[in-house]
Length: 88
Image 1 (cartoon, rainbow, N blue to C red):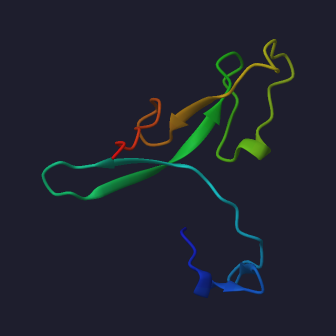
Image 2: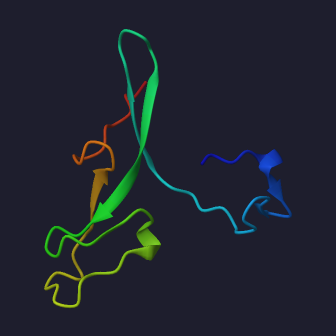
């Protein structure tokens, strides 16, 4: 859920009381309708297939051999690498 400044109460969500967390989105614009389609980015380990929506919450499987390797960003809707926004 996207939060606006008016949705926050003393720096926290008025509904649940937790501090908001920034997340990355994958966005793609339909060339015909110009509608923007957004999906959250998931972080996955290519070795153990563990995943998390927030990079700080990510935990490898116990038997993962590549714990120090980089995580792979994946679009949560398509399962592929995220769409890149066009540079203007």
